[in-house]
Length: 333
Ligand code: LMR
Image (cartoon, rainbow, N blue to C red):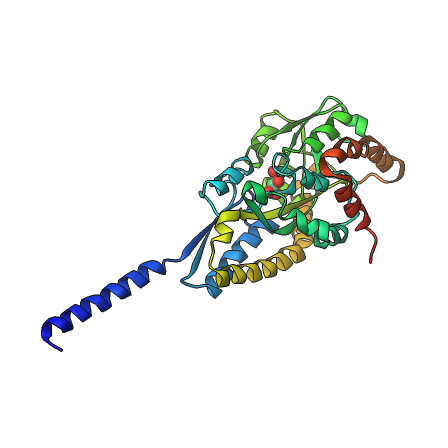
């Protein structure tokens, strides 16, 4: 080979190497969420990043943006559609405007416990809900747990009537709005990032959330009364842009699905423990200042009587087949 041909071959070889390196730029997954890192979702997002970067090193990179650093839950679905972020995990109460059937998770006193929720999520109807927003460009990938919603307020709530005239911060769920209206209170939807200030500034007198969220936002320092009635469970749907997901190389998508299944098992295994730990810490730090009240018998029945009628109002939107499947999942197969 003449000198010139050797140089040309070298240049060609180098340019192939350079373009291969450019082509192998890792795929970036930006995972945006609104809670602290020491909560079930925060732990899950960070674990997802670690496992992806271990197993798909150089092929996929993950950036996690916790605590509403990038987007609120109101903004994040459109951000997924615009390609400004690739993954998120809003609570199931945030999909009100996107898929009415998902409101089944908001219905008060429907799920007896977390096993009941899991049986429903794993049923055919439950799994189909992951695709309930696909036609609108959002693909559900997994359900993650947080825990039971606890009501906190400036006033002790022995009975539903005690909430009369109070203002509660709620997640943007029509079901929750209706619930609070039924007990003479006002439910005001606002982003999670505004919750602590809204309590501090007296814009709201109450709110409902899990212990892990309550502790991480220091609500136990602001509210004295916590009412545990087991009416509702805060869980998440991990979501991505449907086009982004479909466009991934098949082997990468399969690996991500495998990793997500592992992370889901981990999150759902630690969620109850994280909430118990946060509850204990809130009580220890709050001392006499934190009073937890768990109504039973007639008092609990009064909450059920006040709130369960909302089911029939939302049944046409959610679909009776979906509600029936959720109710039937209470029975062990
Ligand atoms: C809330 O807005 O209160 C929760 O949905 C926040 C979260 O993501 O747990």
